[in-house]
Image (cartoon, rainbow, N blue to C red):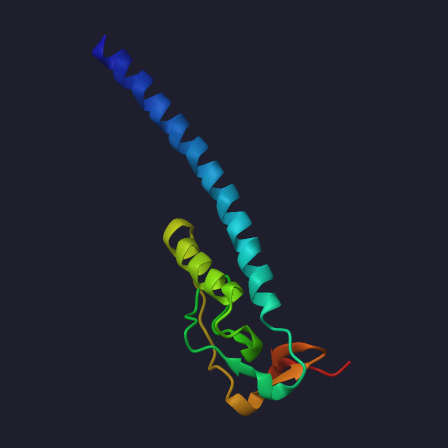
Length: 125
């Protein structure tokens, strides 16, 4: 009888954790999408002197090794939400691992077509 109860408990726990993991994956996907949208929103610029590498941002896969953004987002609710969501993502979601190349120098960061970009990899179209 004890073996049957243990088997039933094991099946229930396994089924429950699998179900919880699926919900967590869905939440993580939504959080990842929100982070990408917020980060892209802070890349809008008019001139290159607005663009810089945000030193507060630490590499977190899949969001990049460094974050080039506009100074127009400084002290904004959007920027605070990015950092809050990144922290939550790091704690609650599985992340990937990749090696990072050397970040660009400030003179290799600029505004092209209304977005702050790494000029080393930007090609005029």
